[in-house]
Image (cartoon, rainbow, N blue to C red; front, side, top):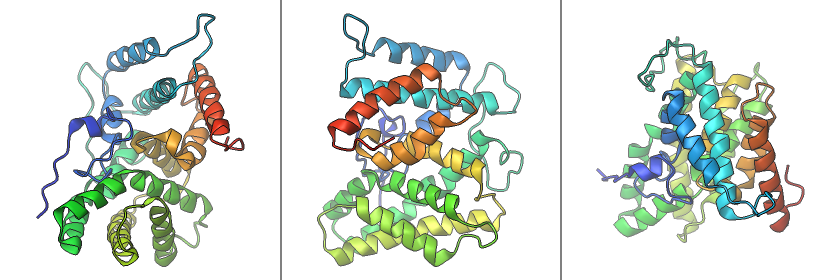
Length: 296
């Protein structure tokens, strides 16, 4: 069995652009933000003050258009999402953090976003990783090559799968349901586009098949357990998960366009107006600089 060494700075998204071979990106970021979402408000308030203090401005008070400000502003948006998850959580709140782990069959957890998001994250991303890692190790045989493959998966592999799943659920007709072959091929195409490891195409395709087969198995278990995989509520938490998990949203326009922008436009006011304006200003300038002026 492969030994997966995973560091907390990856789960807590403390290393922007992280390419962690210990989790292949399957645990990146979302665990830290999901944990913040069950912490007392004072913990998030302290984090918010630190982030705001780290935003750099010109003498006249205008934002400086740099990478650090984009990252800090994005983290402020993530923190607002964590606030929303806390506020919308119906469980009794006290001085201690709320429990974050839920089981698939926990029907009391499914109706609220915090429970729904954590179930999806654990089942689709967290739990399948050890089997994926072992299968890659067996397929490749060479430890360094296997490590390189896992690092490449960590570079936007999982957030690409989440965006593809979001788009599938948005399009699917509930009367038809999720058709296995269609879903699997869409997920494979999305992962293949982001998977750039320098290995033979046959090996690359085999790795993509391993990841997508395990993800589809997880989705099938959720469907078999009557988890409400379709619908706007699930799309919303998948968007949050994509924003939490993406190692660099400024390098992944699809996450910005299909996850972050709809969350900021949500009528529930998931992200504060000041933060939305800041993110939109900084990222619009960034996309224009990159030649993507049509990005939202």
